[in-house]
Length: 237
Image (cartoon, rainbow, N blue to C red; front, side):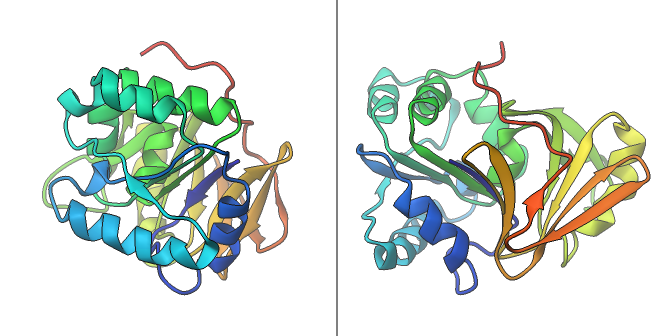
């Protein structure tokens, strides 16, 4: 299972997708991955995730990948390879890709997911899981975005999180910079969830798929069309 969540994670409103994610967890250890929050408050993000997922009978451990050296650690990769659940928290949109892309820990996480682990990312975490993450094109304008190479689980795609709050304002610059990409807008406390060979919208908000001038909006319980299937082969990085 794969979930791309729109942000405001670990708060009421996320129950639908997080319950499904927890139920689908594999038999290994269950991890929260605080990479995106490394420059902010990673300990707080970890504690928030742990408290939230206890209601779904998951006791999360931290997979402490905060810098590139952590991502290349054989010991952390060994832990990740046998994991049954991974949740990448929100935070810095570019940092997750910078730290994890091409790393031994990311390869281990990918292989664990391919073998049946649940994998989720929210906001910056969801952005990093796709082929491209949208980072600021110019400072300090946070609405002008350009694509940067990311982890590549979903080819030709970029996530616009917080779509109902501010992510919708990224569309124009993202399309101008990379018109070939499919844009996936995900509202806060909502998610696009890949399960049993299909994408489905979950949560109180909506999922919006944008390709060129074609815009399609999907609400909870609806199958999401217009998205690629996740890759089963890790792209070369």
